[in-house]
Length: 64
Picture 1 (tube, rainbow, N blue to C red):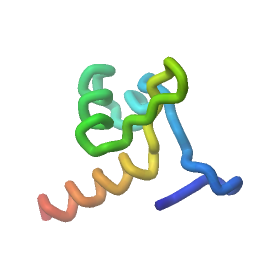
Picture 2 (picture 1 turned 120 degrees about the horizontal axis):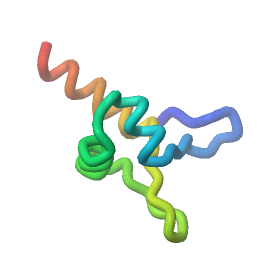
Picture 3 (picture 1 turned 180 degrees about the horizontal axis):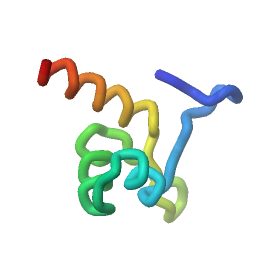
């Protein structure tokens, strides 16, 4: 799993995930949940970017 330099996973908000995936908020959140990247920190909904990247890589390999 990819981590930031401090050793912790890089967590992004749904808005940041939306920008990263270039998708609507609803689509970005559905993809994040489907690939298991969803993390709850208190009431905040965050997504593990390394998990999202791994899911995208897997998806690209399956399409090729």
